[in-house]
Every structure is written in C-alpha cells, then in structure tokens.
Amino acid sequence: MRVLGIESSCDETGVAIYCTERGLLCNLLKSQTATHAPYGGVVPELASRDHIRFALPMIQEALTLTQLEPQDLDGLAYTKGPGLIGGLLVGASVVRSLSYAWGKPAIGVHHMEAHLLAVFLENNPPPLPFVALLVSGGHTLLVAVEALGVYRILGQSVDDAAGEAFDKTAKLLGLPQPGGPQIAALAKHGNPKRFHFPRPMLHSPSLNFSFSGLKTHAREVIAAHPLTPENTADIAIAFEMAVVETIAHKCLKALQETGFRTLVMAGGVSANIRLRETLSRLGEKQGLGIFYPALKLCTDNGAMIAVTGALRMPCEKQDPFSLAPKPRWSLESLSPIIA
Ligand code: KG4
Ligand code: ZN
Image (tube, rainbow, N blue to C red; front, side, top):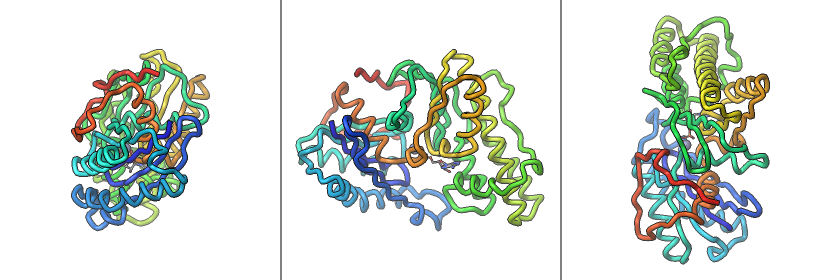
C-alpha cells in the first residue's frame, strides 16, 4: 500500500510517500523559518499562504522523484489537527480535492498520534505496551499506549509546552526561532556549574509538567547578566539541563507507575541530543527500552502523516466531502488501530 502524506499544521510543509512493503519512498520538507523570522514567531496567516504556495509543487516533486503516477497511490493522508486552522484547511482542501480528482481514498490524521507513530518508520520498532513522551512546540504529554490508537494521558504541561519554553527562552536570549536547536547548539559550549535553574514540579506526585517558571527564572538571570557569548552559553546549558532532568524524571515515574518497560520519545523536542542521551543512559542502567525516531523525523514532517494514514486507512471510514479540520483534538478520543 502506498500513501502520500502532507503535513501543514504549523510552519513546515511536509510531503512524503510511504509504502507498507518498501518503507519511506521520499520525504520532502519546506521550512518557513525565513518567512516568520522578521516577526519573532509563527504568523498563522503567512503560514497558510506558504502552505498554499508549496503544497502542489511538492506533491508533484514527490511523484517525479519516486517515478510514480497518481494512479500508483492507494491513498492520501493529511493532518486534520491539532494545529493552526489556516494550515489545516490548506492540507485538507488540497488532499480532498486530489482524492476526488484521482479517485483515491483520503484520511485526516491526528498530528500528535503521527509524531508518536514516526518511530514505526525505524527498522527496530518498539514493543507494546509503552509510555510515549510527546514533546513539541504545542504539547507536552506523557501517554500510556496499551495498543495503537488506545491512548491514556498520564500527565501534561499545565502551562507552556516544552518546545514553547525553549522558544521563549531563546527569544529572551536574543536568538532566532525556532529556539530549541539554537539553545541546544549554544549549550554545548556552556559551563554547567555556573547557573542553577529550578526543576519545576519535580517532587509533585503528579505526572504533570510546568515550564513557565523556568522562563521567568531565565528572565531574571538575563536581567542580571549582560548577554555576552559566555553568559548566553552558560544560561543555555543551565536551562537545557533543567528541562531535560525534569522530563527524564517524569518519564521514569510514568514507567514505574504503569509498570511498562518501554519508552518512546517523539515530537520536535525529542530531537534534543541531551534529552535522548540522558534517557538512553537511564534506560540502559535500569534495563528499559528507549526508542526515538531518526532526528529528521522528530520535528514536523510528511512521513509521519503518511505512515499514520497507511495504518489507519484500512480500518477507518471517512466522509470524502468533509474537510472538518480539528484545531483542538484530544488523543484520547481516537479509535483503536485494528491491524
Ligand atoms: O514537533 P514540532 O516540529 O512542531 C510542533 O508540532 O510543535 O516541534 C517544534 C518544537 C519547537 O519548539 C522547537 O524549538 C523544538 O521543537 N525543538 C527542539 C529541538 N529541535 C526542535 N527543542 C530542543 N532541542 C532541539 N534540538
Ligand atoms: Zn509537531
């Protein structure tokens, strides 16, 4: 089965073709970083316009690269939500129109489920059940995954998402967006002993997170220190270590509470090397399986939408004339994926 997937929920346009027999056939990504850079954050209207400009040429390019005709596809998938309404509407309209014109089925998928399922594009997929840590620009979730499509939220951020905290702190440090990779790059040269940031909600019995206090702490430290390259790097590493240690602690707690032995990380922040290495080290020590997607499949991409479409298409009926984007959409409301 070959499925073309398109991601358009935020500021990346992704188009990929996934084949259930041969794996990922192509994975194209067009970032809008330059479009939004002058504004210091994603401007939803500009994001939608870029998705409109990029989507069809990228779909054409994907077909050319794979030497496939539309008739060789078995279906199309798009991000139905959660995300920015304009971008979601673009993806839904493009895919539903092509689906009608080509006579192929189409399916709208959940963006966070797609992040979670990106790990199934790897050669060594995780065994079920597992705990999923979903950390992106809009979400921080710990999820018990008993079976594919059966999700129970164990904990989530009560304020800023982890990626949002990275982005806001980067802004305070005068760094460009998205801030996560910028902070991670600077942190490599920082002195880990110079500043100490709080570890929010570390000792609370819940599995929830809170990151807004870290941003406030960063603001206070920055106000007291001129932003020299040395100070910036030292603040970056202190902030990164606080986020990583807090997340790692909650992940271990979630594994203990569920009794599961496997953790899957996904979403943009799971591209953070310190987070991957910290969790892998802890996993090795405690005999736990730690799984994450390849770096380029952690941040938004079309491949995760295509693979989710391929898994869900055989077991889900769709209304071919309904766009129905869902800017807000709970993971827990999804139906099981029946193989
Ligand atoms: O999943 P994603 O691409 O988009 C959303 O669905 O939100 O995640 C984007 C987020 C941004 O906040 C970005 O700063 C963060 O992921 N991010 C990182 C890293 N790479 C991306 N955060 C920390 N370290 C990284 N290496
Ligand atoms: Zn995402």
